[in-house]
Length: 341
Image (cartoon, helix red, strand yellow):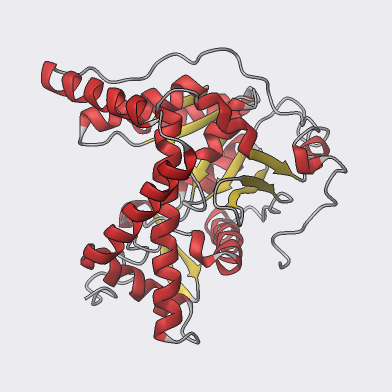
């Protein structure tokens, strides 16, 4: 990989997930953070829940085929996001031919379709069976961190990568506590559905409007908090660091939180396996944090390291990343022409 993602030796039984790390054990069903719904939104919510439960009776060979077909259909008709995806791939892989970039984008839509099939599984009956499809690699890294950070939690650096909804869910289904920052969606019934699915598997939801305070408190009591750091930040919250050799607006709060809490930043990604249905949670060594006392300079160095870790995973498995997001929407200089024009 590179200097950022240093691989530790995998434990002998990591393939079957038998080795237990020093993750905090689940403290029971987390307190619900679901928002209040009006009558119309409540009805839509329960209709969606019923639909997911009904679809979950489909066997895998049908459900995954439907998911893949749905992904291919969106790829065929979602012209706006296809253009965005191709532009991102041109920035990331200028050395590739146009047909090869289009192949990667098409495969990423198929991956999203499979993720949709797994979302049906999470939202329907028999959702606990998904734990059998998620195993770990390099659990020893967590146990090695414990003596260095006694009583403290950790920040999980991740991305919209692989079967990303299964990363917190699979972790919680294995009986370990994990928290996730959630941005409240405008579609309230959909927001309630996402919250319902995550909370019932044991994921602790932290709402964005209380995120900073809750995350700091949680990290200091030993919580594990996962944050995807692969999407565009608005100008007031951005720090510009390279991502595929192009300056990208990246949330500055992630590094600030790590510094304030004094916790390690550990890159963790869930990688879809060649069979399309099983997954491995890949854990990497913590990313060293630059601490010189110059907060701005330190934040630039650290955030660049975080982005490099994500970039290395995307380079290794480009078909598994969400290319259709406008990662470079906010430009370093206001008024600069958009890269997506």
